[in-house]
Length: 294
Image (cartoon, rainbow, N blue to C red; front, side, top):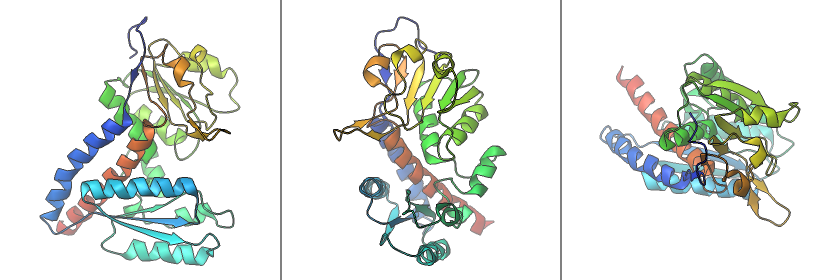
């Protein structure tokens, strides 16, 4: 469902405010777990000193502190051998105080990211990126939905954007965002078109979207001429420009005058991605508690 045609400027969907609401609701669930002597625990591994990764992890630690979740970040040198990374993962997989494990990407080039990521225990895969988690998503039985697409869905729901019966276009086909995003929108009743860098007539596809999700990793790819009036435009991209400023995959200034809803960069999808990591960690703790009581 799109906003009325001729609407002035799009409603800006505030991801920071939405994340705060998520954390407020989570506190009650964390308190309930504490009554059973369970404190949700999130552990992360960072290999190397990637500046962006450090910022992401710092945000996740702050979110843990805000909700009462225990955090544990393991910093490994950039030249760490693969066996050392796998050993650290195995330790966290076996630690009963850890309910969620995430591997901060990207990894240094000498490491096999696919193999290492698949070593995360499915029961602790709060990023939702192991083959077990993605396979369950395809089957319509997800335990942990990938965090960025889950954040997008939460933002759409908060803004009152109807997904059932809508036409959604996802620009991007990665296993982290594009593909699971399409599956999650379909599960909520949307008809989905997936586009990518080699799609012919990208603008034509985009203009037909009631919901347009931009996740191609190309700054300001989506312009006002590519947007259906009143559409919901969700910008997943975060790109560092030559001048050091951040830009999304959407030309925010231009598209805002056409769309019905739009997310900013920063302050849109990013905060909700972090929030969904914490949601999945609390869910993992609840699932383990329920399993032990069964």
